[in-house]
Image (cartoon, rainbow, N blue to C red; front, side):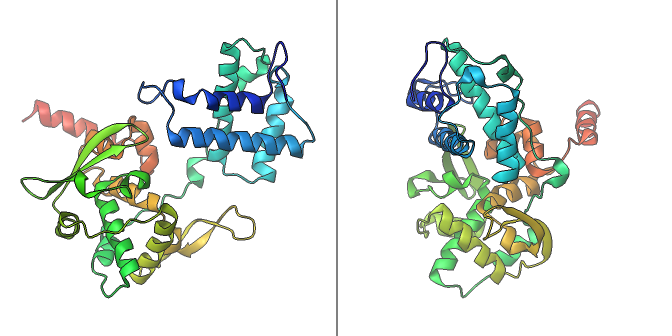
Length: 321
């Protein structure tokens, strides 16, 4: 698969982009070098386009040939053959457009239609945001007589529910990130995705006990996702609610009514943190901890709309002390 004088194949362009990843500007931070997760995303895109080429019996598709038929054919395959979630399909189209735009900047010919590639997301009415309530968290806190493995999962769960970090940062927590505060503890995190250093405080007595002596064992993301479901099941968090699980036959998400513990994942911990504090703690402060840069993104993350009355009340508090 080679480069022509005027254009380049989509898979080859993705691989070029990955090879130069260490010199590329990170849009979120303004620094140099793409994150590991971003590079992993582009590697997945390369594999998916390669699979689509095989499916469509093509050896390559040059970017100068990326007309409407190509884009719509790829989108149809992603949605109806691969049965990917709409959010994921939208993400794939978005980064495909980024790849093509980069090729154009490098002097390769691209089809004019590529400027009109549109991303999309799952309609909000189709989303199912799963969070734990304050009472359910208390049920987890009161659990006892667990096996050593599940007790370790329980501790990580409660830490995650109280610090609001992504699981990739949470499970990398080490003793040197714990500091004494006037009341409770400071927990220092370096958020890989945002490349920001933040500090979260806790006065929770259980967390103080575990973190002061660091009574935790390391655990993988995959193991954690399995274990937290078992902990939640033992805590009696089994109300049947609507949500998505992975169908073991199709390996795709299936919507239905399931016990709540089956629908929980490590992502639910951060969402629960944000949801439970929203309206009680200033939103910018929550966003600083969770790593959201835009309020609109944060509100979508917790399934809320902007509270205009809350803004008006805050303003009245300032002008009418």
